[in-house]
Image (cartoon, rainbow, N blue to C red; front, side, top):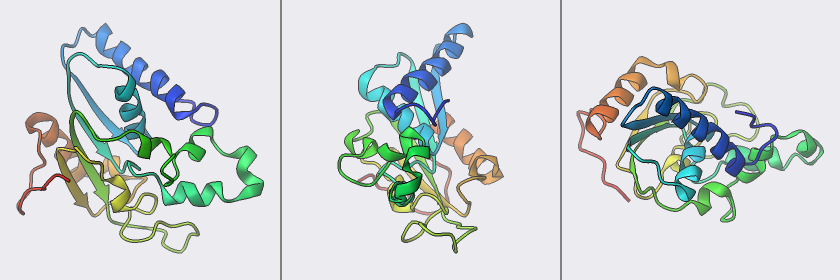
Length: 186
């Protein structure tokens, strides 16, 4: 999706409608989403304004559900602001940011947060445990069904075998597979 030139609401309509059109073309009766990073915010934004018939479950990988400290940092680089993707300005951690305005998840949602930062020396890193781009605390959203932290970094988490196994398990069962006590929703 054209994240360099469009706002989050515009991107949500473009990306989610494209995915739904693909589902309709295949005559699918059930809809599942697996998103990475901003993609999770696009699904939440779309669902805030539209109903999706047949929506079953959503898994978000490293989503900035509470905004992103990294987006705050990048937006603070004044000289670069004209070059920034439009969506970055909307992804900050202020109460007015798009993710913070979307409210609780009203659908079956599993969130996976990464805990490995491969580049801790880069400026603008999130404070606290993070995947190098999004802090674990930023991935949490009220109403989510389940939550899991895994030792993966942001950019490569979608190719990690354990992440993929957990995604499939959640899509099938509505919870993540674990050996520790289950998640307690906020």
